[in-house]
Length: 121
Image (cartoon, rainbow, N blue to C red; front, side):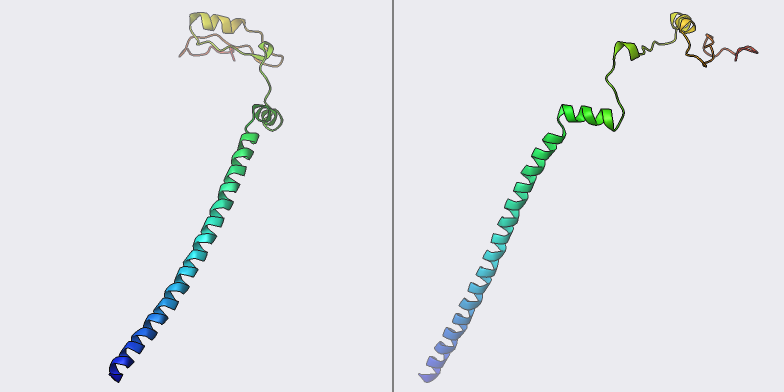
């Protein structure tokens, strides 16, 4: 009977050690889950902040101001609008009548593929 008692005692000690090991592992995993949840909350908060910041950066007034200041763009007016037409019979004639800016050479109205005449340049 004493061998049987020793065997039961050994089983009891081993199961106790197993229980301690499982409890330790469960606590370690619980702490890891808590840390991951805290990180998730932090990232969700940062994502929300970045979404708000992105919406603020993309307002039409800010985009227009940046286009004016950094890209040196300006609002188009009829005075600075240039209309482009396809060259055809009427297009070539209209191009010959366009006023030239000072210092520019006169545009020669020639048909596509035509050889320029001497002195026309």
